Length: 231
Image (cartoon, rainbow, N blue to C red):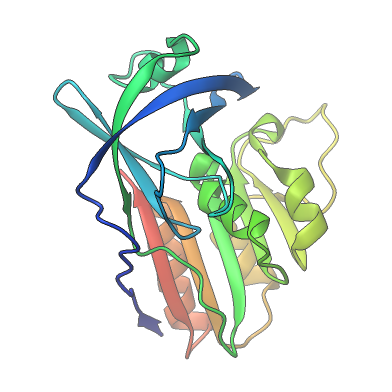
């Protein structure tokens, strides 16, 4: 197994731009999508992030948009007692923010190895950008607590070779989504992924990225691991 990153800087990531909130759409009680104006000439690659500058805070969010979209979209997990997500959750249309970017090296490169995408919660965002940009034929696992947290599943059921919702707290009364696995992503991979070398792309909580990285090393020799960790 090899862990590899490749720096990508399509434009100056240190430049500060002003963006305006165009709309907000709630995806679940805990997450929402926002749409922002896009700075003129601002370029990025699917999988990269944007950084908000607010008072003394800096907050990074992966882009949902494609490089060709006229606006920028983000998926935000709402923490009611948090220091910044409530600002985005309560801001009125027309509110302006300062941003910087793009940032990050979490971008997709096709190889002879089959790609396996693994996300927790809103870590699905960079894979949305990749999928909307034309990347297909990948295995995608989305690890969440509840069915309501399976954002963008309609997209992935159309373009992924295999889409697996991994439910940590599946209700005994609600029907399970098609292809669902009751357990975490590492557990599914250990039980169901055929022995081979893969390109693992991991985005989300540290525990998941650590467990899948160790799993790749032990069970899938010759694999590469690319990861974006949420803190």
